[in-house]
Length: 529
Image (tube, rainbow, N blue to C red):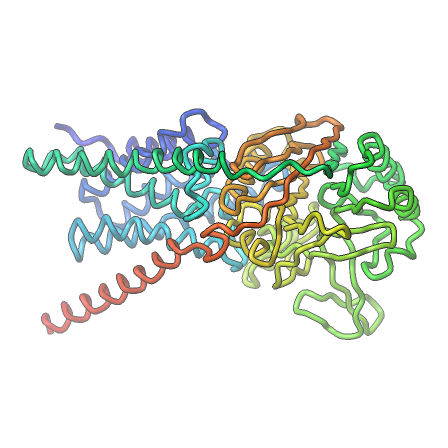
């Protein structure tokens, strides 16, 4: 039988990954998406060529699913797609080497382990973290399949996908005796179907433990303000009054929390974080809160703090002075007395908000979105924002922080009983980006069993229950408000309590694989010498 050409196998894998990704209805294709690449390696091509064809696959996958980044920054999109594709090749190169030195079984196991290790490292703070395509995210619109994420997080989905791909590929090799083939077939079906059954059982058990609906409600505002026109001259006052008008239209006597999106308070005039009460431009905000003394406001805020010394590596000197300032993309909690608490966004967007030091030479590429590297200062701790009536202990997620599962789980360990995502997805336009971002938050709900309230400037704003279902939403590009009675949940899931155990185990096994590979190389060279 004639071997399929490498370009066909490479392109097919990339297209299958694209076809399976949210918000596609063809999610099931993820279980066979890597089989063409496995077939390609089986053809015995050289390592350099194998890397080249794997890279083509990853470029197709990245470009077809995250092309919309182009709308925010053209060079940033190109850089992200090409760089992320290179990083995704590393586990495959490791698999190629291990399989060659240690045989088929060790090789295929190493592929699964190396991929999980790569994804875990990519979720950490290293300057180019871009885990949008973490494999387990593919089930963001199929939450009924992965209710067990409360134990494993998305790494459990990655393990499931990679294991099924490898096992189904082995079935196609026709190198087993009849009895062994049937046994492998049974194992493969078990690995494929057992998670579905487990998810159904978990869902059924949760029906009997749902919390009571509270009397208090939350008002979520979607103002639909074009982010590219947000800083037009003299617009801040009109924008602030729009927020207030939309809020007033839905607040009732049971409202305890109002939520505005990322950088709702963002002005060319600039705000000093510890002097907000002194800002003339915020007088309408304080008037609004005085008229509603029983509510708290959670809002996005861009502000600065002034220091007498270089307080951090990201602090910038104020021209012609000996003082420094830090800029923050924040979530701020207010009541009628003023600011109650702040959280400074910590997961900064590569390129737009941060870059590793060795890439500072390309800062100018991103200036139109506010400039990078020394742009924002984050914080180390996961600060829970507590409402004054103690109804809600809020885990704030600013911008794209909600794609980081273990990161968000730390809020829950710190006492958060609800997750609030405040974001501005309008930079990307009407593309798949905002839909993917919305649906990824559904996975955070399952992992932590917390309700998610999501305020997005241009949409989609929504309420997500603890099973990952969207129970209320407002359409893209509409001014809208949601008022909803959001329960606060306090139990800790296994994942929230212990974090990403699967990935940490994968990292340990990867270290053992690498150590064994080094020992094998040394022994081989010694025997030759």
